[in-house]
Length: 123
Image (cartoon, rainbow, N blue to C red):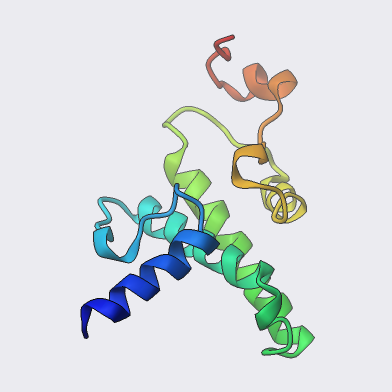
C-alpha cells in the first residue's frame, strides 16, 4: 500500500476518532484492557457516524451496542485495582452513558466511592 493510502487513512482517523485512540500506525497493546479500550472507541465511532446508520437492521445494531457495553464492562473490571469493588449496576451505567463524550463518563459517583473502597478523589 502506498503513502497516499496511509495519508488519507490517517486523515480519516484523525478527524473521526479522539486523540485518546491510538492511530493505526502505533497499534501496540500491552494489556487486554488496551485492546478493550480500542474496541470500545472504534465501535463508538462507528455507531455514532450517521453514514453507517442504515447498514444494520435495528436488532443487529442493538446487539452490537450490547457487545460494546460488555467490552467496556470487562475493561473497567480489568482496570479496577484488587480490593476495590465496582457498582452492582455497572453495566446499566455503561449503557446509560454510552453516548456521552469519553471524558464525561462517570461510572462511580464521588458519593459512593468510599463505600466501594475507592481512594479519596484529589481536588
